[in-house]
Image: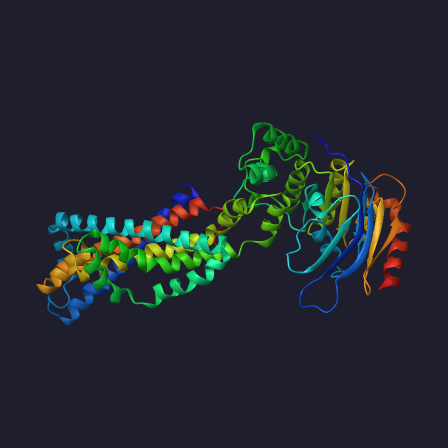
Length: 249
Length: 256
């Protein structure tokens, strides 16, 4: 079922919220290669999550919002996006499998047997098949995030936007989820916002630093090797990246 | 014993202890002050009258129960309908909110004679009275719940391509259920007041009518018996609604 990744070139992304004097960012350019992970790294509040929300079409109307995509418009892009936020956003009134099959439920009003079978299959590969009929509040944080990842995967979209999806997890669970996400999202174009340099180095084939004042994007190549990379080999890269981030601060 | 069973027994025991204490204090007050029974009858006399009048009281309870149930159905449907309309059609909110506030600003006591004049001495005026008294709290709690949906749930629904109607009925409405439940709890506690007021103003049957009738004939023990039935009935209605809502919204657990 895996959707093929999508080449995406943002020619210009600008945003200014109403009632503010300064734009959050202006004229940002970014190229995402098909089937690769791009990690967007930056200080808290610099606007990296906002850029992701703009791509997902989540900026409320009425603000100065401009997004120019090469060879397509904003509506075309939002239809090809799967979104995974900081919180798992599992609906507490639905059980696990209904949360995984949420897209069909919300678009068609019902879930067909085939779609549900694919959801169960995904839960099985995540080791959660026994929890399919449980409510989300009975699951641990790591399990909930795996369910959210299964929901994202079942949408079968070529472009996956992830906004610090593992930031609320403990170190061990974060590591496991990074591995699982890298394995399951292989072949899709992924834009991951993170504030964790190590996470960016483990997963990113391209690392983009979101610089402030004025807001600009600085592209760095990712470390050698396919993600998820072992932490052991990242020491030097991490030192360099931290230094780069420190100089920019 | 299961957790639910143990909880039920503990609750029942607590109710028995509270009732026994109340009756004990009441009896002691009557015994110590020697107050005449046409002012404050002893609980023993009230229980005696309750037993003697059981078929009469059962008939009047049936009438009041029907009025309250129909009033609840009408009031809750109207409240939910108003709240949904205000969320679905935002410009309508500006027109409906003053109407809603006006429904609360006019005391129900003032409306009761007019409703009896318009709708007659039958059940309709009491049903409307019960519906009116719960209309405001139900509408406001539903409206509040519907417009304070977790923003993340709505954003996720938008990225999944859900239509506005689907966002309302499959995301906003379920997320608002705990608020709607608070409105319902308030409604079942208040609806009996509306029905009784309606019966006081003009009716030929019902517990309110019976209390007024007994009061006029100085049969205070009969009045207390009717009051006791009304209290028992209102409490049962509240606790059974509360238990049903807890079962229907299990993800919204109590935090103390």
